[in-house]
Length: 367
Image (cartoon, rainbow, N blue to C red; front, side):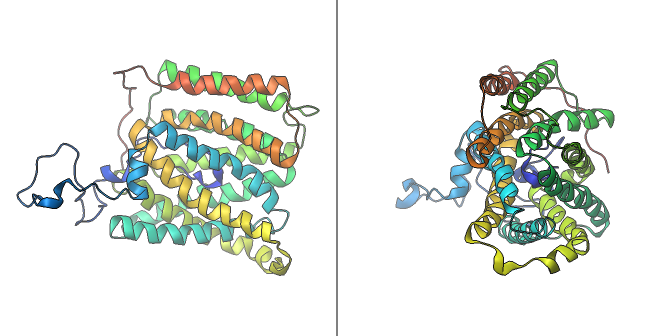
């Protein structure tokens, strides 16, 4: 599964199921029952045939999201996530490094738990699945957030954006090694093409080179990719029983619970009276925009087009992340970076499968 993915970076989830396809959780009925109206389904004996039958439905936010094009939904998600690099970089100036993710994911996890209850009617999981969820939370939240915040402490947002772009490749390699997924030539070509564009974006920064801002920070940034990708592989068996929203909620809460004792000194040392209004606004953005909204958008789109294709948008996210760093953190932009951005956009277009073609899939997940 993802997990933000929780630090604001797309991590593909092999064989992820959308909430509507989940065989155990439900939207409004009993376990395994989806009571939503099916498009094109025959009318039931109790269908409304009265004078109100032609009255247009109220277009709720959920309906608007489901009816929006997948590419538009993904673009909105990656834009919000791309801004997160600069927002977190600013946030660690006002919050203790480890206090920030505890506050962020603790609040976001509780909010998602409420949404899960409203969306699916239940919030439980099997007791036997808790250990796997806890391990996934340890990799996907605990280790991921420790590496993420300290990577942003020791290196630039641009380096983090570049190294974060390796997530689709790292996860695809891991998924291939364990037999979960197969990637076609077109996808691998787009992945390499897009990665080359991301390299140009960062290397082309005036007066800066990749890894030039601290090997420790860059190592932590790549470590963040590794642990988040490992988390994505760990939760694959759970996605045959639960929706991605349920897995994500438990991963956030359990991972934050493991992180809490580690972050306790930071929480005790945090002087909340010195946090400015901008600092609180940054925390609010991390909780609402990148902790809740982006995950709902991303998984809605991923359920339609698949994890591998959705993950290609990581490259566009990296380009936007560097762009936001330029605008908000004062980094310069050069011609080479503009060329790299064009290549990134081209890789997203290239990744789109030909009409009627479905990529090969590996064996289904097993328990």
